[in-house]
Length: 118
Length: 112
Image 1 (tube, each protein chain N blue to C red):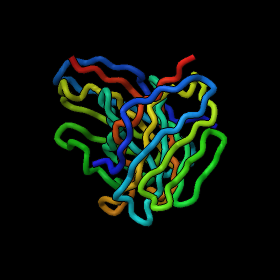
Image 2: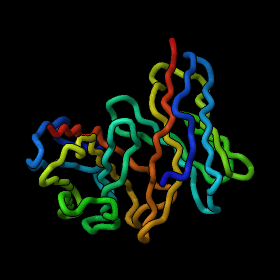
Image 3: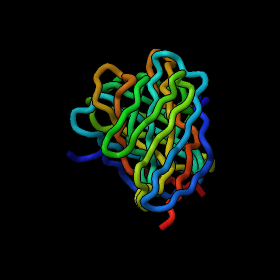
Image 4: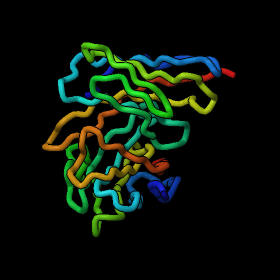
């Protein structure tokens, strides 16, 4: 079974530029998550989709970050304009359930995209 | 706003058992205890989860205290490939959905 795919793996941009990350979840997984992981910290949830609807985006800085999940499959996360503090690894994860997060649901993570903002 | 407390780091020797502790004194009756680990340069991966009873799987065992305020992840024979950051996580309910909230975890070093 193929895992969660993300691209690109690495990205270097200058501040105020824009950047986009792509995620392809495990086939059949209804729920998709984007996390931000700053060096030395655990992942922080940015946004959670159930199919193509947003379940939780309370931690997403909406003035500069946006995300979409068209047709309930692939997803893109965009930052525009980027700031120095956005330097981090952006992780995508997916889980099977169609009922949103369940207490026993397992999340499967992709390898992440390492963003460096100069 | 992580609800768990873990040591920042631990060391073990290869082929010896490892006991990774976690305190979660504010756990509620319906909270599951999850463990994920993150190997270097990879995304986190699921290890094990439990509610009240001890749990075993091919990767590890989870021992849960009777009052559920603490738990221990047990790796029976550590290998060099087990060197990772281990996260002990409780789910939280926010905005009508449940989600994982990661803390900083425990960095496990395995010595050959």
